[in-house]
Image (cartoon, rainbow, N blue to C red; front, side):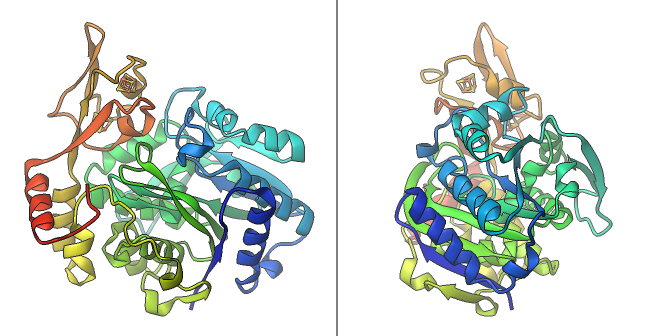
Length: 396
Ligand code: SF4
Ligand code: SF4
């Protein structure tokens, strides 16, 4: 039975965060035996945005990163590496993400090594048990270190409803490779299966979730920061996502990444089969945490068979992008990042070709000016109306 520890942590004071992470790790059996002095430890953080500061709650908070560096350097005697590839494909974006979060300063101070996955060597991995992605490219450092710690942020996600430990491993794919995943897997539930394929090939040894301040509403980039006040730890990413999503009011087995990973035996997605230590879910739950869209998790729940869940989920979560021209600064970051070639410039304005748009949220993820509005399909709007009429709460 996997263990997930839940520890309260009220804010980003370094000492408090250090103690909370320390406690969360000590509650998980056997981590001290897995990590030995001299090991190379990679912190695979979540740096979606290259321009949003830590208080926006888009990226893993730098204080969480600093506390982890201290723990693995000083307490375990390890060499620490900090790595990710950000959401944008622009050459400088991951570099800028390390700068805006001040994680480059933490590295300078502590002697930890920054690994910009976009500049790393890469290796091709093959997944013989794949559902969607049989092969893809990851940063080589993932295979040269001894121990990988995934450090996701607790957030909602317009495409996958929830983003946490399983989805965090998408960032192991450098730059443009992430665009290809969207092209191969354009529907929300197909994309979720592709994320599970990736996670299967690069499972972390340990997950520490930054749930001190999460993001609710239109995550992962345009939502609102929301205090949750927690650090979570587990060796099982699926169990971690199950517990974290339940804390913010999701039905875990209706979140496609959790459901598919559980079905494939990659971890445990059923709350009853998880050993929860520290705080209880009921004691820390934030049930009014705002969801990004679709009432699927509320009125479909875990009892629907896969094909009905997929139908419901893909209908309610299918969206297309539109541009709010009064907010748009014409930086064209979205145009560069659209994997489907659905965005272009016309007389300086950004235009979206609705027929080409696959609703992947890549433009929304990189727009820092709240100028992208993801619109639901007609069927999605109808189903949302029905959900609201039935009294489903906390959906936008
Ligand atoms: S929509 Fe956003 S990302 Fe695209 S050009 Fe406008 S401001 Fe830039
Ligand atoms: S317009 Fe936006 S949502 Fe549509 S395919 Fe391009 S990046 Fe994805």
